Image (tube, rainbow, N blue to C red; front, side):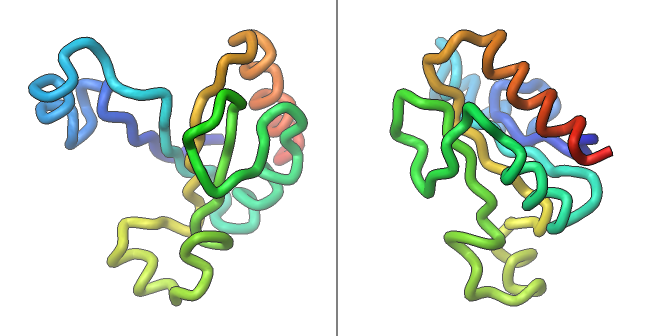
Length: 115
């Protein structure tokens, strides 16, 4: 249900070498991923979340999610989004301090609603 993941702490990420150089103790709790099914699926996923807050920032104690293509970058057309590195199916997630099992359960139930 996920087509790609961007996280500088992953060895396959293009920013991994820089993360190892500048953040040897570990990176942040912000991860971006693409929901299979495009923009519509990403929006349905966001609407199905119960625990995660839909927010335009990532500096919160709560788990927050954002769909940049329909929020912070909504004024851009598809080509401009691509040029900015914002894919229509992109979800940006900032992991909060909730219990990890609760966060995982929220993601699972939201993904299950896409089937």
